[in-house]
Image (cartoon, rainbow, N blue to C red; front, side, top):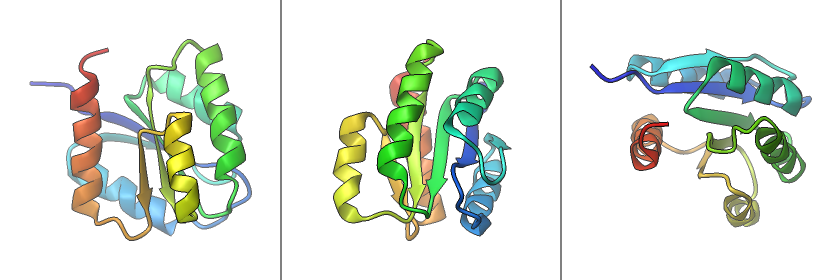
Length: 135
């Protein structure tokens, strides 16, 4: 039997709203994924350190606070420094449409906005891991 997909979900910065990320975590667990949720108010350093220590396939960062254009460059720099830049990084939450393409150019594999249906989230994350292949 194949190993379950391992994903770390994180809330970075001062955003104190985590209902959405908890719903996503539950959805992914119910789909058979191994999910680690780091909780609120994490720094990029904490998130990357945890993702590397947990050896996750996907690092998912949920944002509602508008800091995506500063947080993701830090996350990618930290992943490179940790020699973990093969980790799939996804963004979720609420962000302007104009930021989505810029995030993808930065290296964010997928941007899952607040209105993305749960089944689509599961399917897309599964596709990303299958496309990457074994690590």
